[in-house]
Length: 258
Ligand code: GLU
Image 1: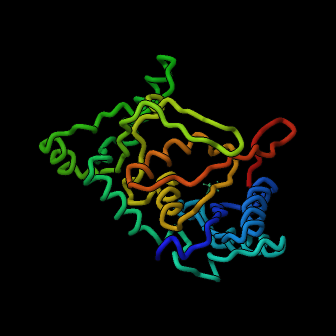
Image 2: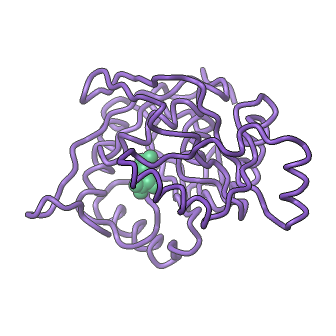
């Protein structure tokens, strides 16, 4: 599909179906929907159900019902389909694997054999030292022998993104220029050892493939954006324009939960 046949403005509302929508999610959906309708763009509903333990068909159904009740009709997504179907991330596993393989081949990603327990131990050490925990790069440069040894012990690798830049910055429509020190982020997982893509990876790949032009989402996702920008750039895609909206909080300033 050529991008010049697509409307210029393509936005998405991408809920994880792990509970009912709350007023904060609805606010995000409204921003996206209004932006699409105002600009003759396309409003996409994408279901981010890669977390099979927490996602339920019941939540997914109630999200669709609530959006319909609010009059927030979508142009592409469940029930509608569209040129970039499927719009359920749980059905796009192979796509994520293919893009992770590309990153492996270009040297932007690597297999990580560290176990949960090992990572937990290292995390504790970081905290003890008073520094922000991050992956220490243990599996970045494994030799063929080391790799084989891990495999022979039955360890299944996760795939990590290899961060090479010192800084990631972007211009946010709400906040202006935002910069992150990448040293503090650390190589992060894009495909878990069970084969499922992480949120940052599936969201980035889908934003690229679905030709999303603008991402309006809660500012609780701000710290994910440098990761997504790095993934997109390593895959050779331009990032969408981001707008991180202030979030609605409880009286005690806690985030709303589903
Ligand atoms: N699934 C994410 C959420 O529900 C979507 C975040 C995003 O819009 O990228 O918070």
